[in-house]
Image (cartoon, rainbow, N blue to C red):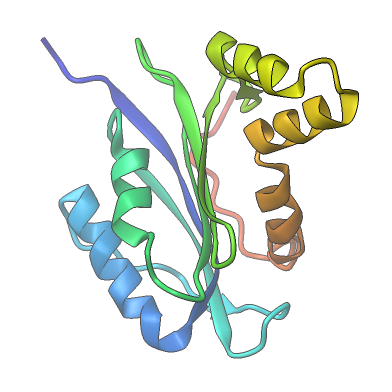
Length: 167
């Protein structure tokens, strides 16, 4: 049986300069080929660099990439993997203070919260609306999004790479 193919993006939101070549090496090892990121200065945190890298590979490559680059201090990143035939999509978010967060995504990139996670949130909340809100924020990765948002906007003027041409 053929392996399903997928694609996604690695966003390194902030990395110390000395770490940049190590991140390329780790990502290349996960992809099975050498890679070069297009680094630029991260204005939100002077002295750090940012990069976006579009990848293609077998389904599950997003998890391999996130595993390969996590664990370094002072690193903020997110990895996305689009859904593919028979496989869910995913998003991995990492910040130095919060660690890593994974969320399943649908075809539109929305986070999907599974039935078991919702049941757990309801059980823990026990009818307390504030606790339910806290549990849902945790499932959605709200704290990670809040911390990463300023770093994302710093890339609004970044070079755009079009992966497809329609029409």
